[in-house]
Amino acid sequence: FLIKMPDISLIESQNGIRAKRIIQTYLKSSKSSSTRVRKTYENGIVTYTHTVKRRISAMSSFENERKISSDEYDKLLLLSDPLRDPISKTRYAIPYDSHIFEVDIYDFWNDRAILEVELLNEKENFVIPSYIDVIKEVTEDYRYKNSNLAYNHIFEVIK
Image (cartoon, rainbow, N blue to C red; front, top):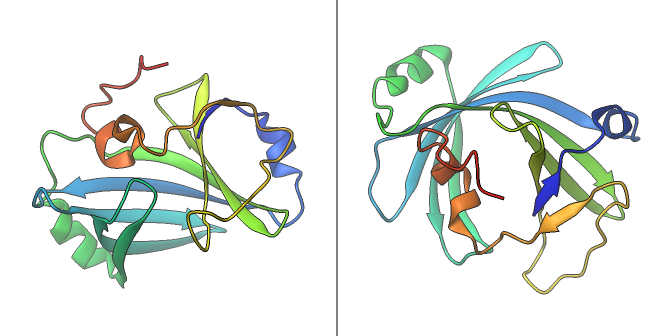
């Protein structure tokens, strides 16, 4: 979901909240998949991951994700896609009504963010927290996928 920029202090006050800082870099890959590396900071700990993602549908994908060392991360950065900028964001994982909602606050937007919820299946019902103001559903709008937002932030002006 595309959402209005939430009240960060309200989000941070929720029970069980987790916050992490993510730098996500897309690597050169085939058209049938996207490949990325992430450097994540959470509670003073830095972790590195390598992910290959293949879309199954607009709502689901298959991800092969593995932890990597900082040396491997640095080597993989040499394969970064020159058409895409790294994406820097803060992700808040919010437990709410038996689901985990993830709010991504991107450095290049100051008026909106992305909300995602992981479901067991595409038909599962869920309730969005009342303090989240949804602008629109963007699940099937590929412009809002991180892999596309990384294209030199060309979607900064999309409303």
